Length: 405
Ligand code: HEM
Image 1 (cartoon, helix red, strand yellow):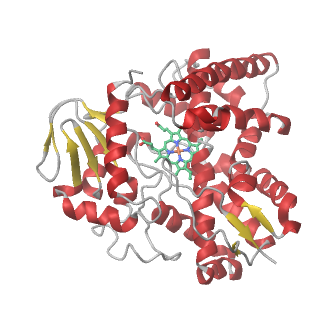
Image 2 (cartoon, helix red, strand yellow):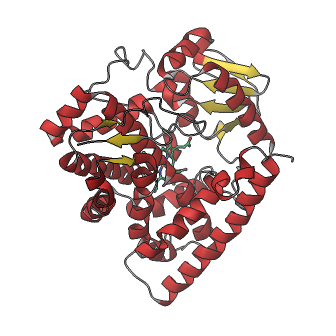
């Protein structure tokens, strides 16, 4: 099967990285890569570069006019993902519509609903004294929150998870997709069509019966007198399924695995929940659940701050994980401190494509930590499950199994 050139380059990059950066504890390897390559820039082959250092990564992210994000990502979609694969100036039009819908104030208003949804999951297993945290909490809770945001009832959760899995975990839909790329892309493409059909129907309903929910706002929001077309709204909804669900699920598994293994730090949260916002920021820095950025393509020959020149067409991947442990920004980066001041981590990216959902994600993580520790203050990795599996992809723990008494 023929893949778009940027994606082929991205696969080569992943293969090169898999040999050099361990999945379970990547932080020392990030620093080793910074030291091994001038400017922290690894060039595994002509036309491919990976930035591990903070300075180069910041430069790439801030210069969208030099590094285009308009790359073809084969995720079952038939058009670019909005706004991720759109460059300015058009990108700014979308963010002007979207930013107010995900503002801190709007997300504050959602807090009671998010807490109720977190508790609904905890209710289901708290009396059991154990759970598969990845499956029973982390993988479902962010999708449930999204149902609320989009104005959909609880009974749509299964459908939401099915659509998400068809794109992000096709092997759950057809086990043959694990090893066979043709099957993998067939599942993703079929699911892609389901996503367009599903959201088209939902949008028809909102047009007929407007409500105070995200889908209605997508249809009605205006910038400079323009609303978005139906295709644009569909492309947005498509990206939300990809960008807004697994990122939070995976972060939850990383954060809870860390806390389960560090009882003294967990106790800080139990003793004083006011430390939670600082803990979330520091654990996002340390774990960096989205370890690498969407590949960018140099639109011309570019000289980097360290003097290296990248040829036009070079596919550049930034390592957010590397930037978040770079000693130039964090001289004590290996100390995980919940009271760290002025934590300028870039776990949510940087530049114009900085995460649209960061305020929502922060609330989901803070509320999950607050509600869990209120109800289950003492817990650990269930004996026999200590060997944690960090599969390829976004950083996450598969089948994280916790127990408590
Ligand atoms: C802890 C959870 C999350 C993390 C770590 C995360 C991380 C990121 C990162 C690193 C980027 C930049 C990608 C790049 O350009 O390289 C990004 C972009 C984005 N994220 Fe998130 N994200 C999270 C949650 C969410 C949620 C809940 C939403 C839902 C609204 C969301 C929506 C988006 C969108 C729409 C973009 C593209 C923004 C643009 O291109 O202007 N993310 N995210």
